[in-house]
Length: 324
Image 1 (cartoon, one colour):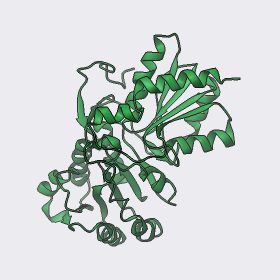
Image 2 (image 1 turned 135 degrees about the vertical axis):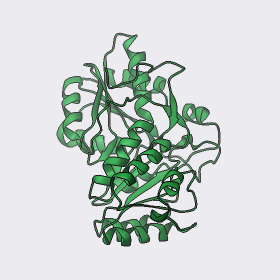
Image 3 (image 1 turned 60 degrees about the vertical axis):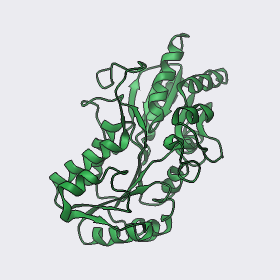
């Protein structure tokens, strides 16, 4: 498809940190609207807010290692008409300041954009304390909150621009390491829609964030065995595009979800809730199975936690056998 990179599955596919796309998108959002401001908790370079700080020094605020203060200041600025982006590591934002986000941002329904960088096990050697896996569940449960997990750096750039124009509170999770860029400049992005990346009839693979690429790899593996998988990318977990998912599963009669996060309460939980209420069908959830992260290289950790295309393909074969 023209909306996908032609290098999917190749070893030399372009790779870039998702957070780099956020940095570019934030500058573009700032150029388009002078009300866009940025706040950071002493991690400006790591969260890629440094370009915005350099371009708009009068609209950048360094609050120091004070994540609760980070979001309460942002909520006050939003109340006065600004569009604040507040960033830190996801382990601290929303991990450390969830209550302040709940009370000062979501409850007041102000358009603060909470940016959680370095999410997932692919953070690597930093280990369990910094590998935020519960953030999707935490933020999906919060009223008024939009939850976004871009699939690659190009999509993160588009998502940042879209969030700046959207009047709702939002959380966006970003990965640390370089990951494959599977979208193109022409790939659409919407805060309301999931994307059907490849058509299929035998199984629906539903991915979000870094795991959508692994779903595409799994689809190639399954295709070699004569199984045609439909791959759906869900960059916006809340509000969930229920129609696209239901239309696909109605055709394939089985599904696998994939996320670099806890399966409990995350994308897998959202899809399980949807199917149990609207269209009961065999489902498997690929993600972190009720455990904390570990130190190691990103590649070894993805293997250790079964977050690979090979494992998704294996799960798909198991689910297909459960079809009525």
